Length: 356
Image 1 (cartoon, helix red, strand yellow):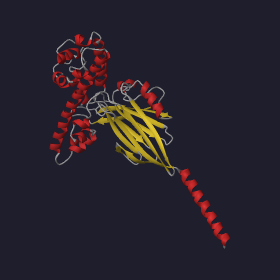
Image 2 (cartoon, one colour; image 1 turned 45 degrees about the horizontal axis):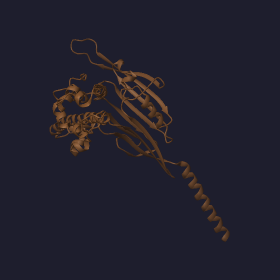
Image 3 (tube, one colour; image 1 turned 120 degrees about the horizontal axis):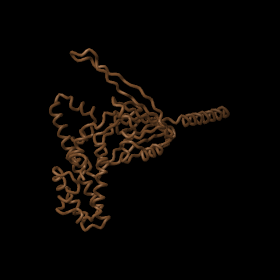
Image 4 (cartoon, helix red, strand yellow; image 1 turned 180 degrees about the horizontal axis):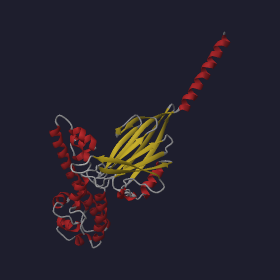
């Protein structure tokens, strides 16, 4: 029972450093003050096979309004050729209105997209403050594996680079001290591989420990979890889960955990194949907030729009939270207040006039 990749962990790490698809996806959520959301999903690719709903990073189906356009990129001919090379990039745009965040959550639960095994949820709230109201919107992606918090693994400087998207990394490297910065980025990539290996080791051993407890296996949970460092050491040479398990415990898994462990291995293999499948995948998520932005934990584009690059590393072992807050004017409150002030001033004026 081999994982499809040549090595369970190294295979994921190699994939996670490159995009596994040429599909470029940009999701925009235009949030209204009543909690309704107009979502557009723009997908670009030069390969028509990419436009399958199961390959999208967010769920889309036939109920969405679809528009198809294209861009033509003409490359000058190489020496000896007469005709230029023409590349067509197809652009599929999908749009749909949602009455509330709950409808988006239902879509996440039932969708047939590439990330459908990852837990995601959207949340909306409105806080009334008379003249203004605060609008809060967020999307949270739950971690894929149970691992080590990167804040506890990386140094502060490494963590800043770890969080950078491609454009931010390029800006970081394009500096008078570019050689030193490029070396530092390479160092963070190596450290990221080490972190992901540690997370996967911890995730697997926790799954195995939970199985042992639920099936009354004659082995302590603490004994299983204590094998993490040995697992990391041995996984470089052995990719077969049962054999790796036998290697780190120096005994046949069936002896330690019972014959049912075979089913556990099969389920675990399927789970990690799903993790491998989205390794390196990314898409862009935008919120367009009503009113004026007052807070966002992403890249602020303008006074209403904020953007995030959603990559699998971001929610590999910790939740990835995208949140924004904006302030909208309650026009009716201003009108009511103005009318009240006019009413009071008018009353005072009449009293003063009557007193004369």
